[in-house]
Length: 219
Image (cartoon, rainbow, N blue to C red; front, side, top):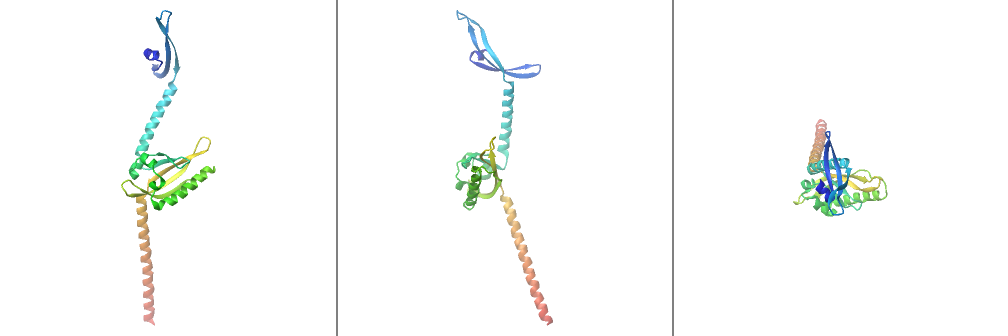
């Protein structure tokens, strides 16, 4: 530590009665009139709390990276100008694009033509609401998005406003999830229900015709 102090400063960790604490040590060498080294004049500052906060932040960042890299849903944020400021790594699994590529995409590159108009209208309304200072209710969109391999995927995007400590709007945070399988199931159910209605209608028509024939035979 002395050598480091001679160069400016040093951080030292000590253990006293099973309690670990950290000190910020700084000092300079003292020489006499004949330039002979006499000692060191220095100071020590207890930075134990700061080191504990830094360790906690590192642990939190590690947990956050683990969560962000392994979640299936895509988390994203937009600034008040409508530009992406964050896209989670899971977008690579969803669409085949890296977060960096998605953050450079224009709306017409991130959304298929059939979903673009509705999304633009919804986002325009959302940002208008933010700029007027009104509270933005949660928004929901079902959109078709292009994938890097040329295919498309149906997603559901939900978003809500972000506010700073003074309750001023600073952007939108949202979550996008793959709903392709859900849409397939809904379409299968719709076709099945439609077929059931057609069969019921055909049965009713047949019963009416049979009733007419029976009445004609009786008369």
